[in-house]
Length: 183
Ligand SMILES: [Zn+2]
Ligand SMILES: [Zn+2]
Image (cartoon, rainbow, N blue to C red; front, side, top):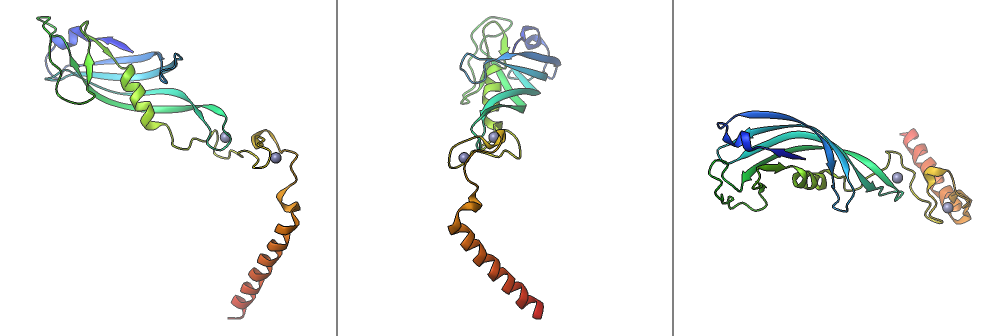
C-alpha cells in the first residue's frame, strides 16, 4: 500500500495522479494479511497530498448469533491528507501540522495507505455481524449451531407448561375477534 510521491510533491498544487491499488495489508495487526483492491486518486495540495479512493477488502468477523468466524466484505471510502516530513526539494525536515492523528509521508517520500485502511475498517465493521441474514443461531439448550441442522433437544412445544399457556392466549384472541365481529 506504499506509493512514492516524490515526483508529485514537486508538481503544482492541484495536480492529480490515479493509482490502481492491489496489495496485502495486515488489517487486524496480528500478522495476517488481507487483499485490498481499488482505486486511489492523489491530489497535490498546498500542504501535502490528498488521498481519495474507494477500496474493497474482506475482514474476518464473528457472527453475533452463531459465533462462527466468517469473511465480511467491506468497502472503504478513504479521504485523508498526508503531510510530508521532509521537504522534497531541500531535504530539510518539515514539521507536521498540529493535528492529532494526521498521516505523514516518510523521509523517502513514501505515502503508506495501510494505517488509514486499518482505521477505516474499524469504522465500517458492523456492530452485530451476521454470517447470513437468516442465520439460525445456536440452540439455547445445547449450543448446537442450528445452521448445520436441528439438534436432539426436544422441541419447545413439547413442554406442557407452555402449551397450556399457549391455549390460554389462543382462547383470549378468539374472544377478542368475536367481540370485534359483533360491532
Ligand atoms: Zn451466524
Ligand atoms: Zn439443542
